[in-house]
Length: 189
Image (cartoon, rainbow, N blue to C red; front, side):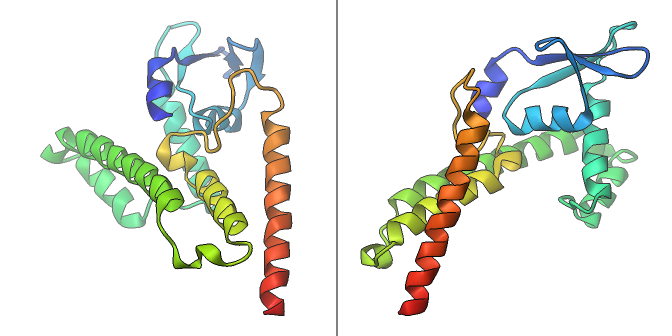
């Protein structure tokens, strides 16, 4: 899915003088959290200043990261943040962006292979009652857990599918129910 996001035209967000952000696709105002949601869903965004035409995307992406980090959603270890700050003042500045891009590309590829292997890996527990339901739950959990890192949207959605959110909620409820049933069966054993 990451490739799909790169091939499509980015979602254009315009910043007005009042600092309000305007989604040109839906003709409404959006928040930073909305923009983070677009990105988690695999969309590329471009944020421009309406008056000057300056590209503000990097500034707003950094602000989104800072807000998540300040809320305790720590993804970046202190050592990594320290090294990033240090890279701005050293000759390493020129190689850091390429290194980070390559690292995240490797992470996306590894996640994709892991999800493929999860479904095709022969497992001696495969004959256990309820194993298939557990395996489906694990796959859904991994897809939900990793979209921010993978650049994917988690479970695939059809474009223009307005019922995607409700079907995701229904799938989650079904998975919870299956997990509860499996736990009950395991506790009886």
